Amino acid sequence: MESSGATAAAEEERGLAASLTARYSAWVAEELDELGGSFLLTDPAMPGHPIVYASRGLPALTGYPRRAVLGRNARLFQGAATDRAAVAGLREAVRAQRAHQVAILNYRRDGSPHWVLLHVAPVFHAADGRVLHFLAVQVPIVSAATARRDACRGPAVFAACREEARVEEELPCAATHAGEVFVDIDKRGLEAEEPRVASGCDKEKALSTASSIFSALNRYSKLTGLVVCGKRCDSVGIPALSSSLNLSLGRIKQSFVLTDRHLPDMPIVYASDAFLSLTGYSREEILGCNCRFLTGPDTSVEVLEEINRHICSEQACTVRLLNYRKDGSTFRDLLQVSPIRNASGKVAFHVWVHLDESARCDFNGLAPEIWQLGAVGAVRVAVRSLSASGSLLRPAQ
Image (tube, rainbow, N blue to C red; front, side, top):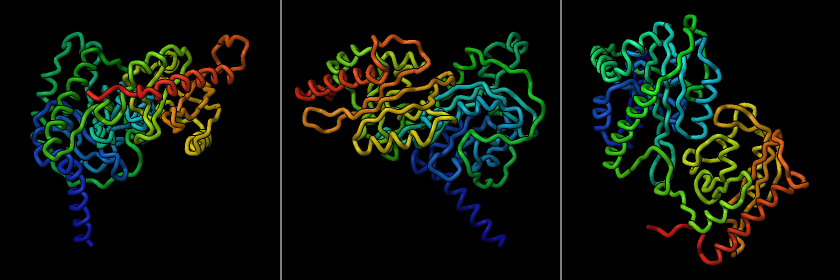
């Protein structure tokens, strides 16, 4: 029995290591080990979304030896007083496959609480836009008194982390924990400290660390013929609409997005200014993402399934559901989803027209649903007229 258990543990450890080496070459871990700071990589394709890499700086910040966290879900850092709203925001960012920063109360191995700025970002396959890993950078948030005495001494903190980590305790690889990353909260830990706010220096440090990590991953991924990047863009198969189509769509003042059903995960390829105002997101944050980033814990799964059925059958539908803005606030969304066909009659896009039912709007005496159909018609005219002349997409450079 002991022999079989040891074999299973060894196989699991090899599987965790292969998550990196198969995608970035066998030398990537050495490169990451040279980077300062506390960070980890998780693999969403493996059962339980486990940690597959932990930095040398992680033990000094968290008290966990590196090998003690491998194979475990990142929720092990949460505790009794970890804010559920912060965890929900992380969950939604992971589900929407977008970067996210949040100040959160975490717990060390000994149960003591500490505040960190957590920066989470997806690592994309450049060829097809799949998410290969999630990066999580932890930057300690010091108290206001300490910050005044020792403002922005990031390099010293990271250097200390790396030096302490060199004498870390080596433990066997832990078993994989089921569940999504950054979601569940256990009941251990002490009373929480007063909430802390991340400084501009903390945020800059997190972004700088993430940038260094992405640079290393990109460089070593090329050795395997696989190129990774930090965000979806034109180079990962998201088409760039022509300037003529962008100009025509820009004249439509309603809140809407265009999605391409023929691309993996049906990404957004256009977002109107009114949609950005309604949701609080920037255009760069949502282009290339699936519309699910608007959903949250109380969004109706049944309504989402209804939308999918209509999309698959190339039919229009109007639904009501609860959606979420970037700041976490909700709005009652009257949503019209319609297929948009090109001049040859094939579905080129789907248009999603959003309307906050709680907003006081003047629809020129029209019912809200009729007002939305006006936007659908305007998009349909723009797409059909430009597809006839072959002007839907920007010419390849």
